[in-house]
Each structure stands twice: as structure tokens, then as C-alpha cells.
Amino acid sequence: MRAALVGVDFGHSDFAASMEELMLLSRSAGADPISTITAKRSSPDSAYFVGSGKADEIGDAVVNDGLEIVIFNHALSPAQQRNLEKRLNVRVLDRTSLILDIFAQRAKSHEGKLQVELAQLQHLATRLIRGWTHLERQKGGIGLRGPGETQLETDRRLIGERVKSLRARLEKLHKQRETQRRARGRNHTFSVSLVGYTNAGKSTLFNAVTKAGVYVADQLFATLDTTSRRVYLGQDVGNVVISDTVGFVRELPHQLVAAFRATLEETIHADLLLHVVDAASPVRMEQIEQVNLVLKEIGADHIPQILVWNKIDAAGLEPSVERDEYATISRVFVSAQKGSGLDLLRDAIVEMAKKAPGSAHLYQDDEAALQDDQFDGQYDQHDGAAPDQAEEPGEDDRISTHSQVGTR
Image 1 (cartoon, helix red, strand yellow):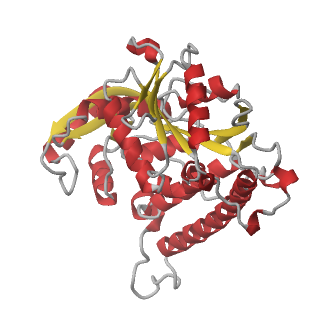
Image 2 (cartoon, rainbow, N blue to C red):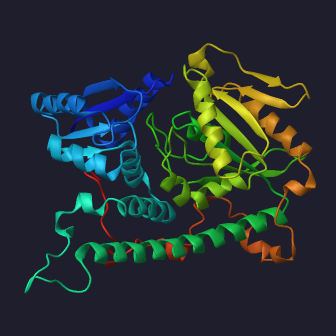
């Protein structure tokens, strides 16, 4: 699908990197970026976000280049999106809708699909009047009055009921995860979560350390589902559980953060975070900041963290370990693809596990007496989904919310 990318520079230093990221996001969604249109403004235009003159310029590009979609590198209000689509006569997506579309394509597990659908419905609920032409209010007058509930109100009610159903399902999966964590804590298992900016190499590093065989690709959000593996790191520590989580990105939609909270709780309840950083990226410090902002939002900013500088082969660095003023490991330099420095990383995990206080192993109260042997050896999991929940929701159980970028 031929697309135009639109970005407005409001004076932020990372504007160029943000537009490059939009290019990657659009390609990940299946679009073919043909044109890139930028503008400088002090504040967004209330009607078109970019102003009427720039909207005309975008319209000319749509006609001249035969474009089918326009993608904005910003969150648009429903009114702005509606106005732009009327003026340009093509589909207009904002950054939030684009990321939601990518997540819809990539979600593979039962829980991941539920979380994506919930986020899509929450986003769609604010834009019903924009997207569907049959949602106009009933006309008044004799013989023209409709039923007591308009189509718009009916659709809002149906979406509300579906959201309630999805939340109930996710709450059930949340309880299953909680039970597994309690069993883990009862067995005094040290828990490690990989976090980081999308495409920093988390899944590659996860595979290198655990031999898991998780899908890896040079694209944004290649994997969404949390995967956990148990790894033996010697007699001093024994088994540790390492989890690979969804990658973060600039301006990650709040709907996704809320919907994926159950998945991200693997991060919240970890004893140690391995914050994977693309050492070769020129904007790595900004990416670190973005990840830390999301960690703060989900309540995981208090957990001990080691910065793992990955892709050192591309950055021209050597495997090494750095410590802070308290002699605690702060950074480990590795190349997951080449296998360089992985022994240093394992040693760092062992050192942090030895230093972890007993209180770091949660869920050791009376409620944790939950059939220990039932969960022993079951840390090789995807999203904590129970076997009886592997089936897909039926067609009559789903409201279609797919946007028109790419194909599924």
C-alpha cells in the first residue's frame, strides 16, 4: 500500500530519529512509504494538525504519487483525522493506529490477541462517528423517528460489552500468572526480565542465553508475547527464570500499556531487569530514557537494573563489565549475535542473584501453598495461557476493528 509519511517538527531534538522510526513502523505494518512530508510548527493546528496549506501539499502528493494512505507521526484527535480524510480523500492513520495495527498482525498467543483487541476497541470507541457512515443519528419528524436507540448508541453499547468481556478473560489469565509466580517464589526462583527498546536485540539475546528458539527478525515488534525459560546457572544460584517481554517505543499508546499490563507484570515482579540497549544506535540514550519512562508508568522503576549494551560488534566495542561507585555491576557489553560477552552476562546475573535479599522472592505467604509439584518444570511457557484456553474466540464473539494498513 503506497503511503505518505507526515511529521511535524515542534523543536524536539529527536525529530529526525522519530521520522526514521515511523518509516520502520510503516514498513512493519505492510505499507510502502513513497513520500515524506515534514513541517515546522510551534503547536498543532486544531482542524488539520498541520494547517490547511500543508494539508493541500499532502493532497497534491496523494494525487501525483498515487498514494493510498497518509500516516502521521503523531496522535490525531478524531476531528483532525476526520477533517484530513475529507480533504485528502484517502485513509489517514495516526501513530497510535499504526502501532495498534502492527500489534494486531504480530500477536500470536491467546492472551496477546485478547490484549490487542481490547486496545483496538478502546481506541475505536472514541472514533465511531468518523469511521462508519451508517452511524448517523436518526432524523426527526413525523414518520422518520427511529427506535429508542440509535445505531451509534447500539455500537457503543456492543463495544462496551465486548470490552467488559475481554477484561474478564484477561483477569482470569492474570490470576493464572499470579499462581505461577507464587509457585516460583515458593521455590525461591530468581526471576529476570529482559526489557528494552524494540529491535534492540532482546529476543536474540534471550535465545543466546536460554537456547529458546524465539522468533527473531530485524523489524520493530517482531515478537509481542512474553516467553519465559528456566536456566541453570550453577550450584550457587541454581535455576533462574528469564523472561523476554514486548519491546517499547516512543509514545507507546496508553491503550497498549493498559491492555498489556498483565504481560508486563512479568517485568513488575522480576527480581532483576536486563535493560537491553542497541549500542550502535545514535539515539540510544533517548531510547534508554523512553524505556525508563514506561517502566515508571507500570511501576517497575524500583527494580534493580543492569544495562546490557548489545550489538557491540557493530559499535566497535569489546566485551566488558562496568561497575558503579558502590562496586555494583551497572553495564555489560555483549554481542548476542556473535556470542561475545555472554559469559560476562551470566556471571553478572549470578552475582546479582547472590546479592538479592530474601525479601526479593515474593509470594511466600500462606496462599502460596498451591500444589508446588503442579508447577515444577512448567516455566517453559508462553503468556501463561492455560491449555483449555488455546482456542480462538468465535466469529460471533468478535467485533472487527482491523485498520486497512497491510494484509493479514
